[in-house]
Structures are given as C-alpha cells and as structure tokens.
Image (cartoon, rainbow, N blue to C red):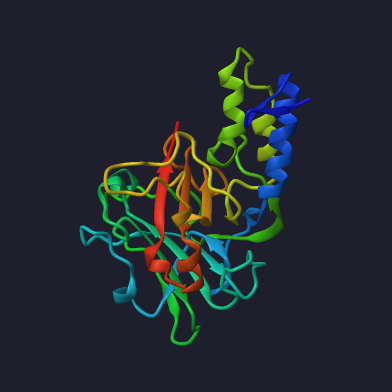
Length: 267
C-alpha cells in the first residue's frame, strides 16, 4: 500500500504506482471532440472538413505568415454542428492555418507562423482556393476538395508520463522499476482519433521551450487544446509527428483566437 511518511509519497510495488496514476488521471480527465474523416470528400461550403478551400470573404482576407507568404489552410469546424467542448464557441466557423514551411514556425513571432480564425457570420462568404506557391509543402495530404468530418465525444486522460502526472510517473525512474508495458497505449485508447478538439495536447518530443517563450508543457497560461492534429487521416507532420494549437482559458473566454500558440514535432 502507498504510504505518506514525512510528506513523501512512497509505494511498495510498481503496480501501486500504476493504480495511483490511473486514479489521478481520472480526476484530471477533460472532455474532447474527436474529428474523424471517414473518406468522404467535402461538398458543403460551411461543413467541417480537413483541407479543401477555405471559406473567406476574399483572397485579401487570407492569413499571412510573418514573411508575407500565405499560410496553409488545415481544417474548418462548423461550431453550430460539431459538439464543441465546454467553453468553445457554439456559432460560426473555427479555421486553422499554418506556415507553408512548418519547420520555420520556430522562428516566427506569436501569430506569425500559425493562425486561428473565428468566422462569426456566414454572410458574404465564398470558397477561396488555397494560394499555392510552387514550393509549398503542406502537411495536408488529402484530396483537394477536402475531407468531410464526423464527430465522437468523450473524456481524455493526460499522458501518464506527461507534465500533469510526472510527479507520480517519475517514481518509476527513482527506483529500479521500469515503465510498465501498455500504459501509454491504454491512455491513448481514450480518443478514437489522433485529431481532436479539447482534451490534452500530444507531443512526440516535448513542447518547445525556447528563450522568451512560455514552457507550453508546464504553463497554465496555455491550458486549452484548441486543436490537436496527429499524422494520419489527411495529415502528415514530418515522421509521424503531432501538432497542437493552444490557448489560455482567459483568451478562450474573450475569443482572442489571434493569441493562439502552435507547436509541432515528429520522431
């Protein structure tokens, strides 16, 4: 049994650590909306989709990178149709864009390498084709028409070895016990897709922590996962990587989506 002597929590067996991680993770679990592309091409201007044409008022309304190049359109969510996580908008469209060369995002100022737009009115909107420079290397790999989405909801536990549970999982390293087999896979199975709204962000190498930037892994300032996009079902981030759009709770309440930060990495 675990004991708490001198304010230090100890366990007699690795199985007790695993059970403690499961219990704490259940308390921390967050709602998510999984985005699933069953292979159907998108046909409706305002439907939720991966890729395809972005719905804008004009080409002049297209988000630009810090170097003046047009961003790459990733996905669109119809907030009136999709079952949005708590606190997310329930009207309009949420659209997500990234720099045409994601590798250069690490040199970009906030908002200069990725963008989130909340289109609140459907009036005067039209499909605007993706500006496509010859050297554009888009992480979107689906058909040009875009992939229509369906949704599944549930609750997601944090990574058992991530920041939220490291105070427990680090106990495996403190002794001679090895990480138990299958724990990460068990938690990953909470979500039926690698792409989702809400929940917790995922990373293959840990979130970037460069000078003058917040520590995205440990900071409560970026507590909301607006969108997690994994490789597969229409996207490829390098070598089976992950991408995350994140925002603070306050900015989500204030609908300041222009303050969203972005992280991606791969194996």
